[in-house]
Amino acid sequence: MQGETRWYHDVAYFWGGAFLANTIPHLVNGISGSPFQSPFATPPGEGLSSSTVNVLWGMFNLVVAYLLLVRVGRFDLRRTRHVAAAGIAMLLMALMLARHFGALHGGRL
Image 1 (cartoon, rainbow, N blue to C red):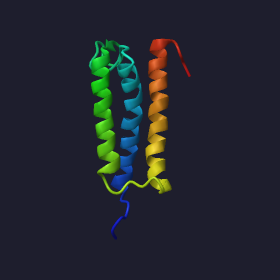
Image 2 (cartoon, rainbow, N blue to C red):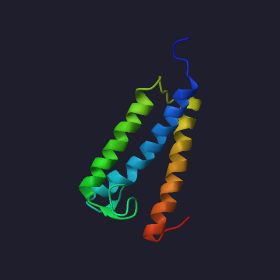
Image 3 (cartoon, rainbow, N blue to C red):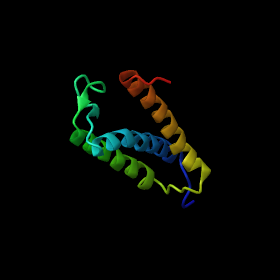
Image 4 (cartoon, one colour):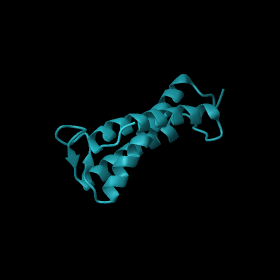
């Protein structure tokens, strides 16, 4: 059946949502010129990377999110199942990032 959502599409949409959420803090900090944590800092995820590194990392996450959400299957914003898979991942990633960065910046959940 054409257009059928397979289980691995849901997995791709879930991870696409996670990468999309991770795009936001890196792009916002990078574009605003602020140093921010990245996997390339020392120590990884805790030290500060330059705004340029964060723009590049944010854009990489956006490209991966695009590939997972748009190029796998047929993601449809009108299908609750598709949006739920991406949205749940975005929420979980946002909460995880809030706890991680909150511990480094004084804001905790």
